[in-house]
Image: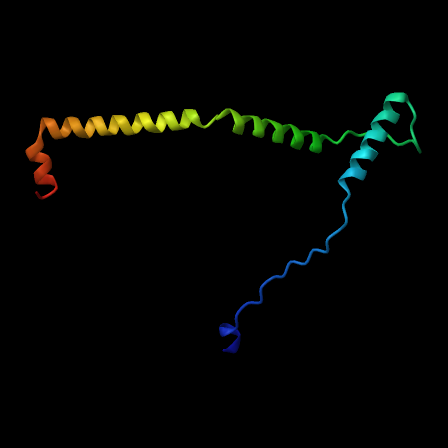
Length: 107
């Protein structure tokens, strides 16, 4: 019976931090790229470009460009137009049949 009332033990996440030096990584990538361009290869090592880093860098630059140009203004204009149309529709119903609307709201 005690097993049914026992609370489950939560899973614990333990990640030991590792030291990461982005400058060193960028320097090594540049060195590999230059050596590949010059035809100097070490230990039959083939140059593999960092595609993930390039995608991330390009995404960040485009996201910053979108944020600076105000790309959300189209959404704001559309919302404003919808609100105006709803207001005009409600105004038309009130002018066309004010007694029916007053009965609907119990006034």
